Image (tube, rainbow, N blue to C red):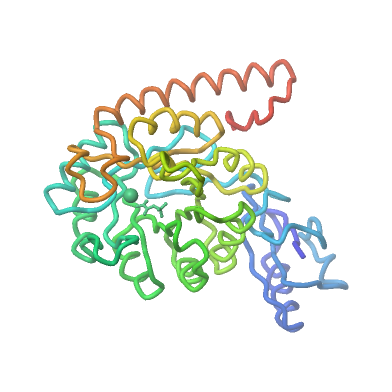
Length: 350
Ligand code: PEP
Ligand code: MN
């Protein structure tokens, strides 16, 4: 059950609903509704006077299983990472190497991606490698380099956390916690990142349905963390020429079903650097709120994912095209609205 609470509702109303749920042995939690009020999600049904307390706006017995991630009864979310806002505005660019290779290498990469238009620095310190013999990342040393790069450039950093036991450590250094494709359904990890106050970048499992992805987001939200950004990063296809197939259907569909911002990873989504810029722009055209792109000053020397890594100069060109595309789409949306036409998703301007 979802109970919508008005922005001016007395706190006592929410407290009473939570207490009534607890007394009935039901889990319940609140989440912002995106326009000043709140939603209470109850794992079951409440009845009686509690549903008519002052400030109870509406009661919804039927709803999606991902009741907190769903777009029902709420407006799109904006997630803040440091001073960067993801959702509902200019597309956000996250960029950096696949893996943190060393202090100087990361500082160089960070300065280069900032100059090329990045808003957030990416880089893995703990890497989920297919082979246990491949470079697994620098671990905590890598996290320290990310913190140094943030201090040098002012860019907030996003980095992956692999295990529940690592969450506290990674959260000490990172501005945003990345849950990777291979961990999308690691429920203990999702619960643990849901207990932090750091925004979470939730990559779609490469064999996961969109509903499974949203249910994973639900784990984070239900654990108390409202700041989740979804990332479409490609799904397993059958063509050996492509590492993964970027599923751009997922972008407008996830935005239709969920209030959470959605970004696109055209690097892992293609595995091929020659495709990255075009698929990045296609992702924005599909309605993405941003991109995460693997960039290295010397891509052929990258220690991980070299074949899908682009140069800072290519990122700069992509950033310019992304800005131009965003302006064009925004103008098209405004024109459509003025003409009272419903384009499939005029939300590109929202
Ligand atoms: C990454 O972004 O470094 C990564 C490992 O991505 P994914 O989890 O999507 O494979
Ligand atoms: Mn990678």
